[in-house]
Image (cartoon, rainbow, N blue to C red; front, side):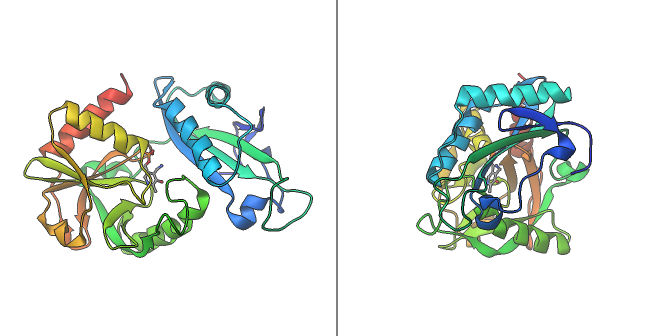
Length: 285
Ligand code: PMP
């Protein structure tokens, strides 16, 4: 990804893709003091762009980090990056982090807070097999308590267990891993939220220690508007075999059907199809 053509927005300037570097003593690189967003632009319009920019600012605050940019400025920067790269349909990655300071150590109050934006073309998150249903492994790691780490933030530090769990899943031929949380309830995947269907009704975990995804919130509202009953509640692993359908939601994943979790199988059924199609229509509306 490093050596290619394109422009990356860094701290207010567009720089060459290959020159978008940071110093080795960057605080975030040593202590994970970084927050980020993943967004998608469809037909020249960023879906829920302002919500993503606000979440970035909120995530930063949860890490005691004040971004020197407003929602309006972040929106402008994202569109400037899309324009500089000539994209109308693209994935957008925004990262804000603590840079290098006068001294190197855990404390970083005087360090600059930096931000950069890259955009690239990205199709289906789980590849071409999307409609066959993704296969999920059950992660060995647990989504932590909100008293352990700020789980509501989209903070880089939370992704260490995601990378490890996704690698373990891929080694078993799965496309992703499903986390249980610190109490043992079904939580989310490494980069997406999870939904289930039983008897035509939708069930999804409480967002009390998972990332309350923007796609998740969009899909809950959309499903209710379509007349589905949506139950937001604690879900036990013992319930996994009782569900008929399952899907994941996320900016990158969009609505991706799930065909298998561990040894339990699900059909890519009518509710999943209706939700996926409605989401597809909504993002392009
Ligand atoms: N959970 C995790 C851990 C994620 O990384 C993501 C992707 N941002 C999601 C859920 C889905 O969030 P969103 O719908 O806002 O992209």
